[in-house]
Length: 110
Image (cartoon, rainbow, N blue to C red; front, side):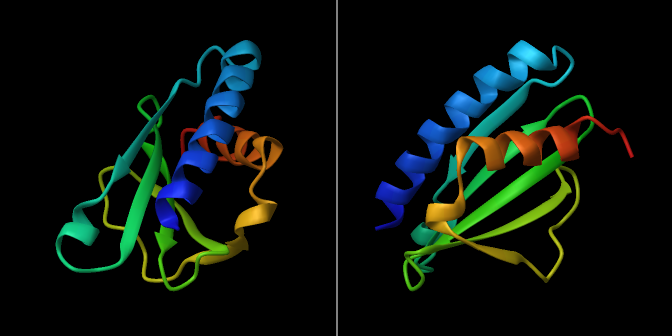
């Protein structure tokens, strides 16, 4: 289920990214998917949205055991994530939600 969720979110991020580039030339998010946890036997995939300019990251975690939810955190690319994550229903993750997160997080340097 997480592969399907990741593909769906990636498509939303692609659209949000295009909107960001149109409205915020100084924000250029970089998206990646990491399956290393799965390779270590943890039924989880991780997606990151990074802003190279600010060093900030949006971390999305997809657990097989929670197929209808996404855990997320606003953090920094060069620091370990915090222990606590927010939780959002998968269906609540929209192009607008992702766009808003990127603007909120990546438009400020501190």
